[in-house]
Image 1 (cartoon, rainbow, N blue to C red):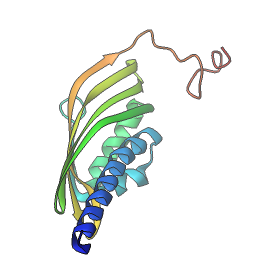
Image 2: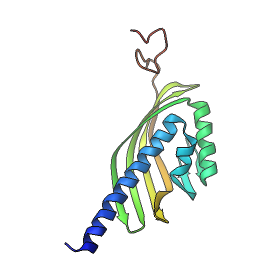
Image 3: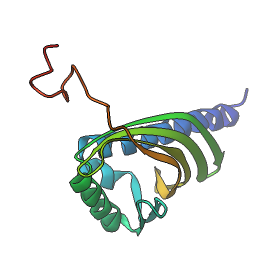
Image 4: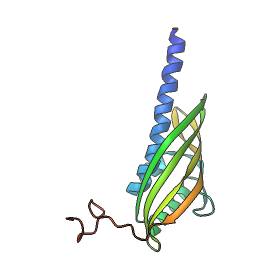
Length: 161
């Protein structure tokens, strides 16, 4: 194998890892309420299109503002990203990822949100970041009888159960 071919394979692998990491960082940023991490995963002109249920936002400042609004209504989130598919085309890429998210909503209580993300990413100046992240909502389902009985998010009176 030529050095050029080996270099191309290595770049492909590194790009896949970088994009997988961006998808995970998106989930961690929302779950941890980490504005700095959330800002770091987008190019400045990025779009976050969450659909009718959650809104459409253009630019990093608008995306972070939308996160603040979501955190005000949903103070606890836990995202699970799965079944990621990535297609590289030089300095651009597309990705798809399934998501299940459990949230504690101030009005609805515990809610499960499920859907699919469709991503466009670009490598600019050597850095991969989201250009567009579009969410297709499969369902948003209140779970009225859901109650944690142990763990860091369980109420103090049930944490020892």
